[in-house]
Length: 393
Ligand SMILES: Nc1nc2c(ncn2[C@@H]2O[C@H](COP(=O)(O)OP(=O)(O)OP(=O)(O)O)[C@@H](O)[C@H]2O)c(=O)[nH]1
Image (cartoon, rainbow, N blue to C red; front, side, top):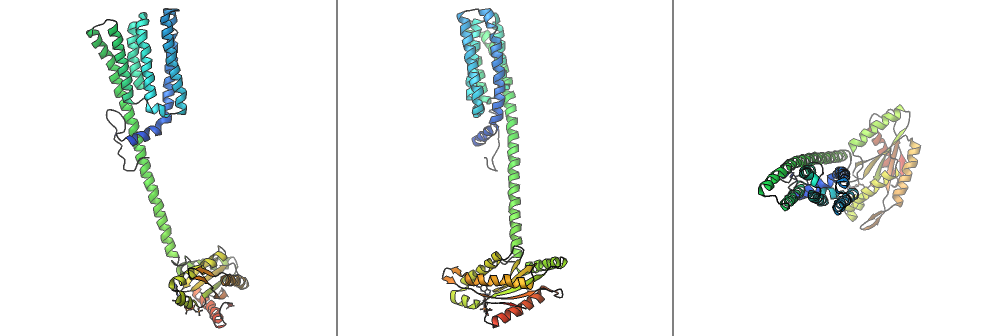
């Protein structure tokens, strides 16, 4: 695939992209269509070849000449059929052009022989060769320079045959002019057609490339937006919701629960002797411990529960659709899990515990601060009572 800054210049004399890589990509892109057009052209050629062959017998009868012409016709027909079927399996044969050019040259040979054998239609043969030249440019898809080679072979061969018959320079020059005319017309027609096709392809590629760039830009912006949103709503160390976000979620859940006459509970959790962990193992291990607790809380609670970082080593857990009794059961499970799941740190396993203060949200609670304050009282009592416990308030 070409790069975004590819230059799509089309050579004015070859009707092909100047950049070989782009030309190859174009031919690959168009090979199936070109092969289909080629097969159509080959079929028409085959039908005409055999149809006109029926006229050989009444003129030539059972003779060596008839056998020669019939042999050439059948050989050309066999080549046409081979290319017809083979181009289905290998469509690049149509866009490479070498096989088509070889068959075109072979097709001319039949006419060189006819010129000597079918005396009844000598002048027609030259006319038919002229028509063949223009057809091979217009009707049989091929690369312009290869069609020109085949046409030059046809003109050269025909002139050679006429010279062999003893005609002099004036006739040969006239013939050259006559046969060059369809070649020039065919050349410029094919050149224009192939240039336009490539310009369309170039336009399509450029539009696709711009689209791809736009899509990438949109994806990058979306990712950036997501990241900004994440940064604005979460705590960078633990990935838990930050204060602004859990407050917003609390208000939303509280409203919903009140509408649906359901309970909602809140818990404040504080890691025990956390200062000791920091002092003993360093701040980095302290950070690991905070992440460990945060992950454990997030994984054990429901998707609909809200886990936030309150600051320092304190966490806020909001449990919608949960009354105080249920909340104590859930939080007790958290406490046990934390106690029995030590942090696997680079300095070895570190046992962590936390104290939890749980409260139910009441209709009179006018803000989250009031609820947290009440839960904090439970927490404070828990700390006083020896830590690693769940207290209600
Ligand atoms: N590593 C780390 N430590 C923090 C962070 N935020 C606060 N801390 C530390 O957490 C510790 C909290 O200590 P204290 O408030 O005395 O509480 P504690 O040691 O857990 O004792 P109790 O709560 O009474 O069990 C302090 O040493 C703070 O420096 C943080 O983001 N990372």
